[in-house]
Image 1: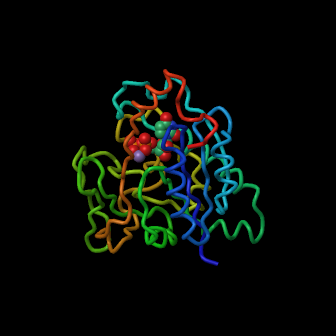
Image 2: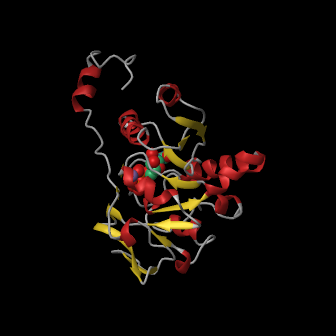
Image 3: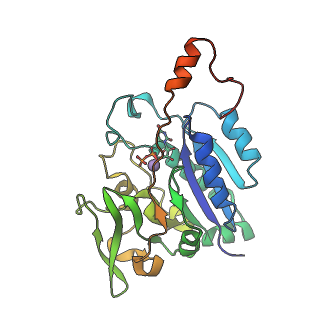
Length: 261
Ligand code: UDP
Ligand code: MN
């Protein structure tokens, strides 16, 4: 069998959640040996996500971890104020480490080959991306499209090595690289218990807070034709307008709340 890919996805309840999860799951259904770790930002598993996963046809683990209130973006806060999804990704890592320490024999050997990827629920992923990351020794990297106010950001490769980063903003961050732009070998995650996301990280430093415990720039493994191909896009979904819904609701004629959207 080819190495497994463990994909950790933080997700939270909002109008577009089921649409995002549907799109994402339909991508993942095309990827062999993918195990989806879905971590809800919620105090308990929600019926929507529970039922969705049961019907998805994917191999998955369903977890939940509520972001503490003081760490959560409040209505009206600028979107860059606090990192999103940090607690949930850490919960996914916790589950992997727990599973890793319980594994024995053939199962443990398979884990040695596996890779971990952090996939937000709203991005757009090419199938080729998963084959690029599948064989990762420590940390592999590649370009991300439509991110950071740029057409793309990417590691710059010279003589097969990452030597710097093409980014529009604070290039001197330890790893100026989006969450969608790297994968880590599971073996490396399991042997590096200090590697976790810092929920208090400054804007743009969440990825660095994780990666700087693991590698230096010199160790990065460039994928996607030496980082010349964009295979993942940091797309964001517009918040749907509910003007008519709100108006009808005031007259007691809102859409049936028993219909799941
Ligand atoms: N997320 C979450 N709780 C929140 C906000 C976001 O779990 O309160 C998740 C979201 O579903 C996504 C990830 O964290 O998978 C990153 O969030 P978002 O896509 O909003 O961030 P951005 O696109 O701005 O980087
Ligand atoms: Mn996003």
